[in-house]
Length: 336
Ligand code: KG4
Ligand code: ZN
Image 1 (cartoon, helix red, strand yellow):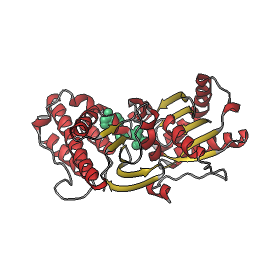
Image 2: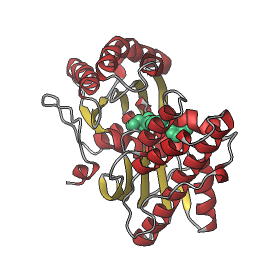
Image 3: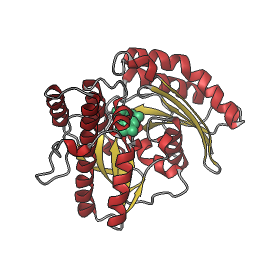
Image 4: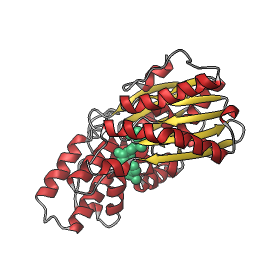
């Protein structure tokens, strides 16, 4: 089966072609970072308009790169939600129309299922069941992944998502957008021990998380500081270390609770080098296996949507009647 994947939930137009026999045939991506950078965050209306302009040329490019024609496609998968309504509508409308014209099945994919399954596009694939840690700009979730399509959220952030905390903290420190890569970069020059930031919600039992307090801690620390570049680097490093430590503490608890021996970490923040190294270290010291997506598949992309859609289309699932988008959509609803 050859599947076209379309991702337009936020500020990336991602298109990919996945072949269930041969793997990924092509992937193309247009990131709107420059468009939104001057506003310090994503402007939804600008995002939708830009998806409209990019999507058709990108689909053509993906087909050319894969050396196939539209008529070779066996199915189409697009991101149905969660995400920005206007942005989602662009991918859904194009995906549905194309599938209707080509008379092939079409399926709406849950964006976070796409992230969760992205590590399966690697040669060394995780096997079910596993603990999922999803860390993106909109979500921070600990998920008990029993098997494909059966997800129980066992912990989540009660306020800011981790990526959001990185983005807001970077804004406070005037480091630009998106904040995650900017903080990670300057943190390499900083001393994480220069400050002791809290590890939120780790002094009481439970798997839920909270990151908005850390941001306030950063603000106060920065305002009381000498505001030098070295101080900025030290704060970034201490902030990043606090996030990584907190995630490891929560993962340890979740592993004790589920008794699984593998962890899948995915979503934009899983690109973070410090997180990858510390998680690898924790896993190898505890006889666990940890899986990350290929670095280019951590942030939003069409490949994860093509792959997640392919698994469902292979099972015979499709929803060809009209189309819907779901700006808010719990991962757990997929299990019903
Ligand atoms: O998964 P994603 O592309 O979009 C959502 O589904 O939200 O995640 C984007 C988030 C942004 O908040 C960005 O700052 C963060 O991922 N991010 C990082 C890194 N690269 C991207 N955070 C920390 N370290 C990174 N290297
Ligand atoms: Zn995402």
